View 1 (cartoon, rainbow, N blue to C red):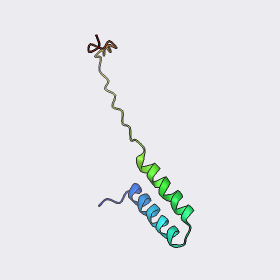
View 2: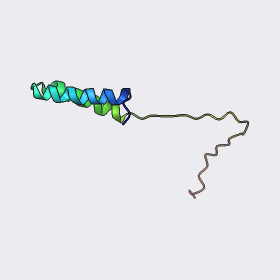
View 3: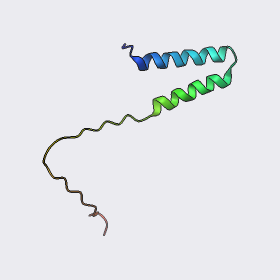
Length: 66
């Protein structure tokens, strides 16, 4: 298993929420878990741009509609 920054962050947040629940700080545990869900649900977008001289023609007509 690789231990990069994301793995350390997730492990720390899970451990922090467990400790918060053990100490009966339920609001803090809820905030930690909500932040973790929000962080993991974000979209990773990668854009690949090719430097070619090809012309791309976009046609907005729909052939299926009559």
